[in-house]
Picture 1 (cartoon, rainbow, N blue to C red):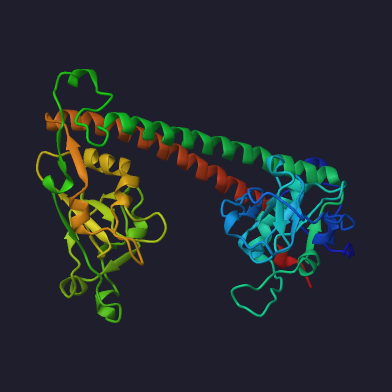
Picture 2 (tube, one colour):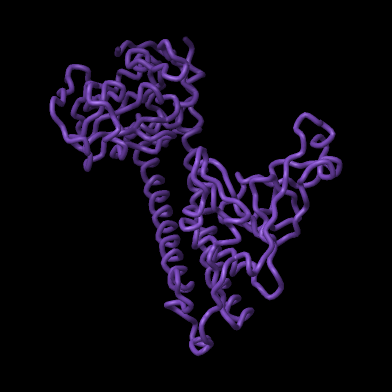
Amino acid sequence: MSKETKKTMTQKLRFPEFQEAGEWAEKTVGYFFNFDKKAKKAEFFDKEKILTVKLHTQGVVKNERATSLTGGANYFKRRSGEFIFSKIDLLNGAFGIVPMDLDGYVSSTDVPAYSFKENCDPIFFINWLKFSYSKLQVERTGTSNTLKRVSPENFFNLKMLVPIDVSEQQKIAATLSSLDDLIAAQSEKIKALQAHKKGLMQRLFPAGGETVPRVRFAEFWDAGEWVAGTLGDICKITSGGTPNRAEKDYWDSGNIPWITTTLIDSNIINEANEFITEKGLQNSSAKIFPKNTILMAMYGQGKTRGKVAILGIEAATNQACAAIILKGGFNTNFVFQYLAGRYEKIRELSNSGGQENLSAGLIESIPFAYPNIKTAEQQKIAACLTSLDDLIAARSEKLEDLKAHKKGLMQQLFPNPNDIDE
């Protein structure tokens, strides 16, 4: 698995100290790994110590669904520092390095692991694979289309270009790792801000069954209890619709923004992914809602149901979006923040059945409390929480900039695997 041929490569970016180091060599993926060390079969193991590999290069984690796995499969102990991948989902980015805290955990033969050679840099290889996995031309075999697998043999025989001098591998790895550290630090800052906001919301809004928040701005200490009721007391709930997809003149050349639940994510919606025509609007239950309408996802995949957003534009919606039209005297951002803070409780209201959904009636029944001095205290709370949202958004933008910078750097440091001749 370590055959070598000559390959000429013009690199877009190379560190100065390696400018005269010669061309990278064509190797197979197997060049990086030891194959003489056999994994030890785990005859007995704690079902709480099973690994899984997340998709899209998200790394190796404990398998939280381990108790649902069958006991008849062959499981093997994995060691920290080993490369591990899913045969089924390698091409979906399911690979990583076993971390220290999961040393001695096990995985099945469908999630094999291999140790790196000492003269190869593991971080260089992982970053090359992160850059290359979606472009790899590797056969998947099996009788089922949904469970076709990439065999280790096919994977390890893939060609790649490698700097033979391990110090160049290490230089590239260190550069990309430093960016990973910045990305991780920025992610932690965002998580900390989000946790701070969540905790603040729990104190700024009354707990269930209470009418006074635990934390109140000084000017409102003596303002009395909040008014308790339901969301239906302060608003009208309606929804939109979907024009017939078969009627092209309902969609083609449309200029009316049309919103679906995929855009609802505790945010302000300023643009649409789809548009409908005036004819489509007139011939369906779709309707145009004004700017500052609060939208709530009544159903949707995964975590969508129960999320809220504010329309930053006039737009129509589909029938899965509940439009919350507030009565006069209520601050849009206050209500939005209140509902965002009740996300988990709102999801618990959903109907049981084949798919858990919300309805207009259930949304109207959401417990809702508001300060008796409506505008001033509502505005103060909304402004406080919105300022945190702005800070989180700024941090998130910086995070995306760092990720884009790393992606661009990888495109210059690594050759495209498709450029290698077969």
